[in-house]
Structure formats: structure tokens, C-alpha cells
Image (tube, rainbow, N blue to C red; front, side, top):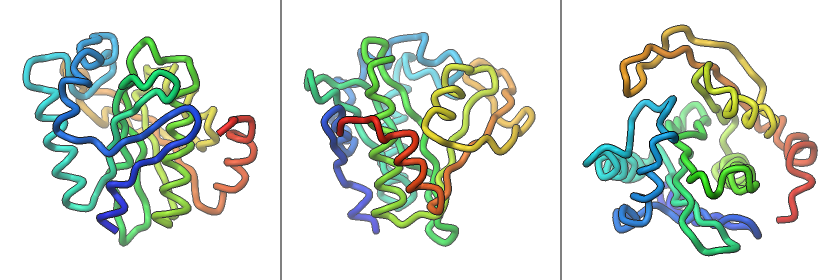
Amino acid sequence: MRPLLKSALTNTKVILRPLDAKDEPLLRPIAAEKELWEYGLSDLSLPGKLRRYIEKALQARDEGTCAVWTIIDRSSGNVAGCTRLGEISWDDERGQIGWTWIGKDFQGTGLNRAAKYEILRFGFEVLRLNRIELKADERNIRSRKAILNIGAIEEGTLRQHMKTHDGFLRNTVFYSILRSEWQHVKEEFFGDLDL
């Protein structure tokens, strides 16, 4: 399965290119947008943080526990951010979509939704995962609405679950989509996409 974790995913709106260490200078201007890290576990705008983030992501991919991509806006060809299908447990047939950050110029354009579609399709149809999870800081209403808008089911809240970069102990809301639900989710929540 490891070679599959370096797959590129694409549709008419987005290109998800496997992350490479050489992407750091392309991602740096986006990581510099401080508002992206308001609810973040890390603040990648700080010196050295982006490089370490990329190194850890590539290491996890090499270990077979994640696929990580640089997000490219297909219409402009510009780098828009980064995303991941991580915490893959092959024994349990599950993974988690997350670690997604997209520059403000690309927010609200449908790019994130098109990327999520490709990752879900890849996870269920190619990797044959049974469960794909998503999670969000309880305070991050925008992310929580976006997760519901791709057909994920809210499962519950883990109290004081994770510490953000500023030391706040956040409550984390968990969501999931199951492979048995994927066909319905694809038709109901992504059927309008012109991919």
C-alpha cells in the first residue's frame, strides 16, 4: 500500500500533489497567514515550524500511516495549502482527513470541498478503508459546518482533548463517514460538483 500513499489526486478544480520537501518555499507564504492557526495545534508561521511539519509528515508517509498532499488550485496553477489522510490504521481499516490549511485567497472557492471529495474517494475506493474520521476544535464553527456539509456524521465531543499551540486545552468534536455510506454521501453531498 505504501506506493499508493504517494498518489496524485486530481479533478477539474484541484490537484493534490504528493508533498515534497521542496514545497516548503511554495507553502511558506500561506503558512505565514497567522489567522490560519487560530485553532491550530501548531503555528506554522513561526520560524522552523513549517520545515519540521513537512519533515514529520513525510516521515509518517514513509512509515505507511499517511498520505499528504500539496493543494494546487487547478485554474490558476497556484499552491493553495496542504492536506492529509493521516493516522491510517490498516488493521482497523480507518484513517483521518485533517491537517488541512488553505490560504485565504482560496477559501470559499470550492477548492477544499473538491479536495475532500478526492481524498474520500481515494480512501474508500482505492485504499478500501472502512471508516474515515474528521475532527475539529469545538470553537471552530466554520470547520465544523464544512465537515457536516460533506456528509460526515457528528459522533461526539472529547473534553479537553488536545492542547493548542497557545496552551488552550480544546474540546474536540469527532465526525466520520463509513464505506457503507460513501455511495450515498457521494451522490447527496458531491453530486453537484462538475469534476
